[in-house]
Image (cartoon, rainbow, N blue to C red):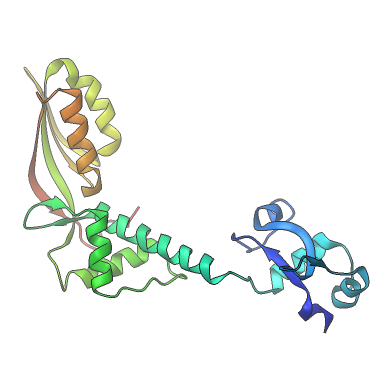
Length: 226
């Protein structure tokens, strides 16, 4: 009946339990349309007949709790592309090539995901899917979830200040020594390697050194993807 013909203007967002407070984040407008593309607004009597009220906000809530979200194909495509990129970013952030002991770039992981024809599952979290992608990629390329064990040797003058900047990028400091220079052995997520390398190079004007000592495997149960 009339209810089926009434359309709604949507904006992407969560509709779960949309209450008074967050209803405006989900909707572009509280107006109920008969045909949104032609801008035809629903008449009061149609609303009463279909919903038993002409209170547009109340009707919006009913539609939100019972209705179907109309997401355009373009919007869905953009959403899936974004998820694809997010998954590749997580994989690149947590994995290395065990032969070179170096991380992969996001672009390379995206390309590898396309090669195995990985299709994004919109109802699964990107973290769950990243684990699935790692499992699948292992069959076709050298890739392991691991932390990188690094050693930095920093000049004393810049060392302490630089350590503070490096701290947020380090997972665990395993060893710290300060004689003539500051020496730190630590574990990091592979995704932080380039930033750390750059920081040390720039801040010490090339006087600091950074070497990759080894890889520490991360077993699947060991660490949830944060």
